[in-house]
Image (tube, rainbow, N blue to C red; front, side):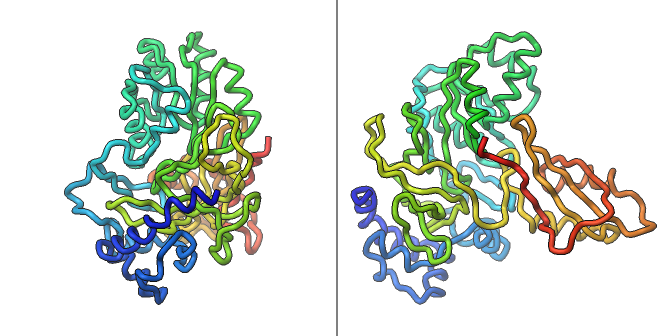
Length: 399
């Protein structure tokens, strides 16, 4: 662990100095904390800097669109731009494998000439493009499936003899279920899954189809933050980004085995993500990995802090719900509930309407997908308790 952190000591000083010159938002962040660039000589000094959270990025972008003063290059030089739920805008510089997922796919066994089916979304969010870029950096052939018609996707998988699946584990299950229903003999041999938890029962089900299943961990802002090797024993963190596990209260690094928030610092000249809080909880594993890799490992996903919840691989925030429902004065109270059945997420919108007002079901069935990007079942109820959370997660990931 010590060697891992020490390798970034010089990079911390260089990155803080560079970002203070190129990113107005980061320079303002230093001033607000009463810090100078000379205060950062090594990784340990980063604890002086308050954590930058997703809500902070969203607020910066509202005040100074589109990138909140964090972008350190001319916007005209970017390859693509994205908008993830939140909303949060993300830039993609014109760099090969910018999100650094290539090592994760190589650990899975993807090689030049392999055909991969990419089921992550290519629509506005960066998920599809980031894993596409990693496959292309290896030299694999990509079927840009996204999320769509399962039957058509299966035809493409079979016709092009795709051997690798890239996407969420729940969508892979849906594909395999559809293949059984339609009688397809699917040639997939391995799968790289991400964007949502992989409970043991779902991994076992997927592997029962003869697939080698590996999990990756990252965010839309930071890209690759960890991946499984052939030992399937924790997530190896990448060697080109500083991953820390910190106390959510004081921001200090915690000892191995202690659960804390995953905090990330990127060392690139494009986007100033320094001490970025993912909101995800994990802990360090200190036992050597049987695969022989020397990089430290995270012990998997161990919960979240904050109020955002991932549904079907994308974040849903209470503030998004509140902003939408404020448009409907006929609704007295509301609550969105996330459940899981047969390894698929479901969203339910519970509403209490003012007596004498018309049923808002049809209106909400249109408004929720248009504004929140999720479909939801509308449920009229008599009451919702005082103090009930706007967004309630009832899923159990332990099985």
